[in-house]
Length: 358
Image (tube, rainbow, N blue to C red; front, side, top):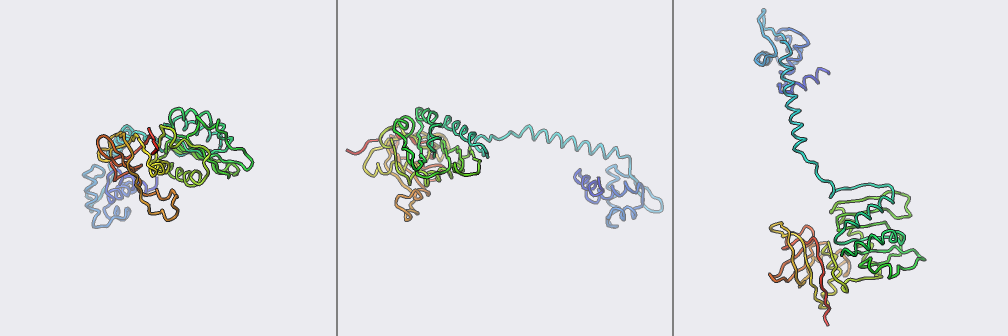
């Protein structure tokens, strides 16, 4: 170890900077006058006497008179014992930190880069099997065939399944026998697009355009990032394209993990005078405790700052969006993820009854 490194280490062990420099300088001299020690260590002459007396009190050096004040280093056992005690304290502190620190779960915040599409597809199947609210997917016909059984199982559990089929130029549309009992709604997009599967607005499996030369994909278990993919799906892969099949407004129950998608689907029914009975599961904003409401939707509200772009553009729902529920206890306002101004932050909205005005 170089001299500067030894000085730094002694400072970290508790010696003052001048004390560390003086002691290391004296080790090199073995014995010397105060002036010699000051010159060897770079300590100001006015400070060297006080520094040497401090080191003597600590048991590191011995002072004696021989024409002038001189010093010599004592047996290093004292300082090495002190250093060893400090080392043991640091080791104990390290062990205690390891004991008290608990590895945070990464299950909800996992991001993985995957090269093989087969692995992406297997992860998508896992996400489907774990879903309990809704699934959104953009699939080629071949990918749909591979996931059809898994999607059907999810549908049977009450999961809302929305799929955009990427239709080739000469391909036949998906037949109803392959849709009913598998999907809640299906749309067709006549262009190639990335593979996307979103589960419960918490998990995403993504792979580039099938014709792309980059053979990689991403899987996410992160709610914030998944919302980005959800808006991409909604804006570019879902709303602009023709509807092939839909149970919305016809069958119940239908579940939603996102209040904005619920509004997009059911605002037209409410505008026509339909009655919607829903069950909302979420958090009480004030108490942060789990809360469940059952009642009738009596109002829909959203900040419409961007509606000038298009009357039907989903961007108008990017701001505040909420619904009001009439329950036996009164009217409650319900917001989406991160709600602050409403009574309830919805984690799940289930449409249990839909009656059109006769």
